[in-house]
Length: 319
Image (tube, rainbow, N blue to C red; front, side, top):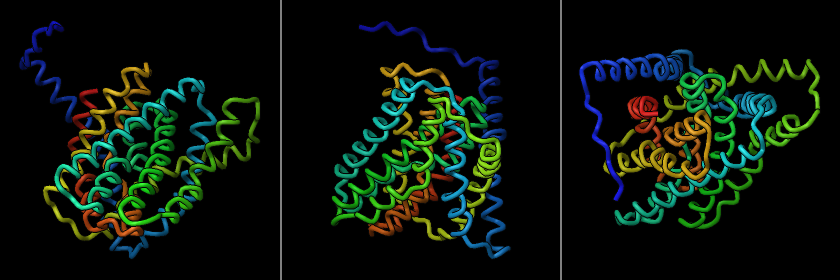
């Protein structure tokens, strides 16, 4: 039997320290990120901005530049990178499998089971996750958070393809979308530069740097525009259950799965936070294209993004 020590006593001083940290994380980490999202949401209608334009520019230009800069300039050994990939992919595959099992136990249809799986695996790890992690953990976290971002995106696309195909037929369009993802185009050259003596010309380096710096604020503003278009929210037991899997179960699984991988503190914290991000709008887009209960998935996107204000604050304090 494992001996369990006494539980820490919540003294007034300890309570005050905890509440101070909670407020600090909420106002200094979460709110700056959501402030830009809110700005996009409020100005989108007033300025008649098109929600498709900014995300497309970020998707094809800013994101590849950010990934190239983060990975090529990092000093993460390949062995550590392999551990990080194994950790985060295992976490999301187990989360997807668990979500499917829960939906099946709830007696849901094949389409709903597929939707639960897609929600569990497709976190908002780009515009939202990278910003939150950078504010909380500092610039040292950019490289691991970016590696997790790429790995989760690949895993999510593959799982969503399989879930859509299992629900009702093939999904070759989503598979080809994976192969056309610009973020993946930047990974290989970035790894070559990072692990060799290749020197990128200063002109190119500075151009990429300027584009990379624009990614996070542009994507956060674009998220506000996208949320503006998702007008209908239905809060039901299924919405709460699916959101809870994404926001609470996935990071809890990450904490357990990380143990045998022996990750450093920053790599571990970055991975747990990425695992706890709300559902990405891209998941709703894939659900709509494959007719996987799109209204339900859209409701989860909105609900989980709002609920993450609380859950991510608690996770960051716990870490």
